[in-house]
Length: 324
Length: 257
Image 1 (cartoon, each protein chain N blue to C red):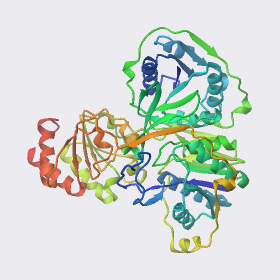
Image 2: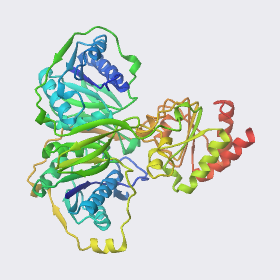
Image 3: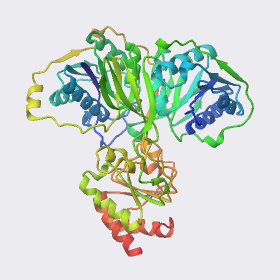
């Protein structure tokens, strides 16, 4: 077996999930006695490739072409397909970033494969790879295997592997020039931008009380605000609350919002879909109040109450006031 | 503009899920179903585009007979007609198989724009839309927040990570996966529900589409409830008792009060 880790770089730095994917590739290589290489798609990315050359890898492939200066699914998918045809890895691993989600299904289809996306863990069973995914927003797990000949492709969920486990070493860099023509790139990406400066910096908050779908009606947010007030905490929310306009977008925690790591994160009526968890799982203490005992938020909670938030939260406000 | 919206029917969001005895899927006998929420946003975006630019909004759904209910609801909200690829044995774990069926049904439609939700709430692959684009030879963009017509093409606003966005210019025809929450979802009106009864639902089977089911690319070992790896201290009793115990822990263990 041979493993190829395709890593993401945003122009300034490697995406943090790139290191998780590299660590996973190295770990899997050890378990299956395979060679592991890394690839980076980046026009003029010599210095970034040089960074990878200091890791324990057989080789670093730098896929370099002026038409890959800006990310497009057309360019990336065509270039990586050529690389895979050339290198013939048995397994190609990707970080499950927004960018990978955008091109990986296209790349896999062009190879006649289905990528296993958003993998949370793996095991090797009789030399065969078993990948674990989540169904129903994390409420159910499924073990899957590839049913077809290599190469096979998979993307790894944020936080599923530990970036600090990457092994150092030395590897040669090979520059690969894909065959691309301007007509291959059908879409035209423009400048990146941000909507507005964030007035609320949740990242600096010591305590956060966060509210999710379980709150049901916008009028009920006042109840959770009161809980935040008695604790002296900032109020935050999961995406659906901000989507509905019940709280401003700047209070959103999760992959599309802010990433926080407070002393305490108290989640009220938040089931804990992965898009939310990646934004807060670094919190020191996680507390969850939710009516569903199977909600994924309890996977990472230190303390929890399974119950109706409309009954529990008023009692909790009372109890905290008494202890103050 | 001829707009196709691909939707999926999934178990209702607050369903209590149990594992089926086969260990290959969940127990589905007593579940209620609804439109996959991200697809509801794709439908809304499609209906709004049709209202702005004219043309036709067509819903397509691959699923068993029960999916007809979800299709009717989409028609009641304003879609003009629907295509139902009716199949009880859809290989639910292979987005390529589903996309193959959708592509076969959509090729003769020659749409200008295909919209889907960004992912399904049940399988969560987040791939069917992009695979469909590749099968149909169309350019695509994902996590779209906004669509503007511009000359012969469109300008879309993509969501990136950490609060970043990007505009992308695209030719038509194209496929977009729509980010959830981009606009308020409409309700079906009484008139809409009435009208939906007379709207066309074209029923097709995999056999009629002439696509032999491809060998699955992925096999399922088993489906199971995740084992709790972290020891969560759960407080039970009445809400008052549980809240009091939690508050004590927050003060004396977590030291945040």
